[in-house]
Length: 201
Picture 1 (cartoon, one colour):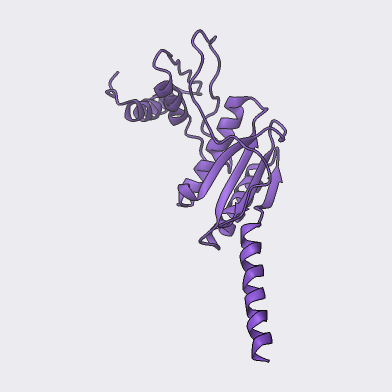
Picture 2 (tube, one colour):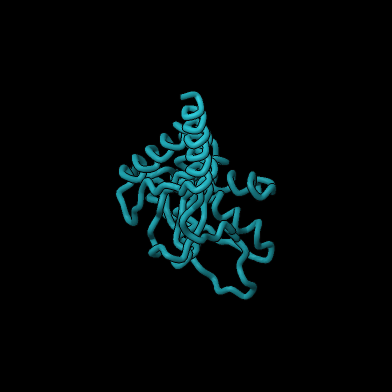
């Protein structure tokens, strides 16, 4: 009887180890265009799943086929929600995969030893080719939406730092002079902090 129990114990241990090595990351959500309230709820659920397992890492897969700036901005929205919840940024990895539609987002949970069941690109570059024609980087403003506040000035600063040869024009359209002054002061303050130039410029 002792020999049988000993062999059973060894067999059980072996199965557990093999299962841990051959594990596959789990897809927990997938979406494209959704309302802001829905976006917040799904992201919060994703955060809760990662937090419930200390060994888990969250993977956000975005499209490698869509407009790069649009995809980059969608990543920023998720990062804003993570920051708003004071969640550890290092526990979430952003990747791009070619199988996704232009606006599609997938949320994955990867535990220790598990593998992602797809090829991905984890590089995110803000560098632009020289001679690139002028384009609109971001559009937005202050509204009462439930979406995470997009820090557009920080987004612009990130691209300017990566492209020393580039210049940026900020167009502010607001209903009155008071709102204009406030918006200008806020944007200039963020840009001066991020770009390290005097706020009086």
